[in-house]
Image (cartoon, rainbow, N blue to C red; front, top):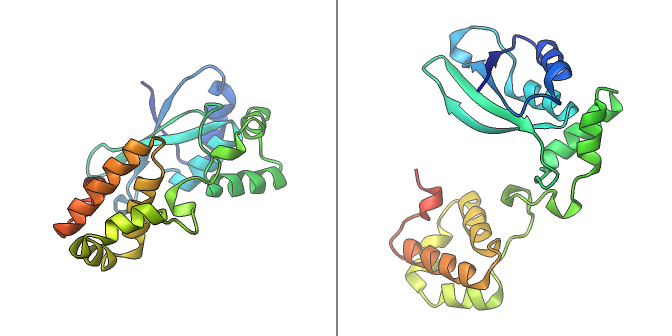
Length: 189
């Protein structure tokens, strides 16, 4: 597992130029803002990674001054966020995309683009699910006083499940947690 600090986007780009085809991962190290120490920022690193067909993943705290993010080559089946699609279009316009990045971009699956819950405009339970939820008045009332971002995420968690039995199980859990004045476990702090 290779871990590396980069002071500038240019130094990260240099590493990617040399290693994007040979390496399977890199942990990019970052200094936290309060340290006053210089390092590449997360948005800068994502831009460079996209240029070479790589993507950011897991983020871990190292200590009080440092955190790290794992970068890997993007898989053909990976999901593309709308933010990354917009960034790639900007990088194409600026002439910064490497062939490997363009290849990853061109092989993306349109059905797997912009599918994150925060990118959905109108997430709703179907009529049967909503009827079941509303049948528990306490749960429904408690749910409706929650923040809009929570409600959107919780409903997405229910409706995005692939199997009907999973959707029902999740809805049952959402109703139970709402009845008890709780957020779903996934979204609790």
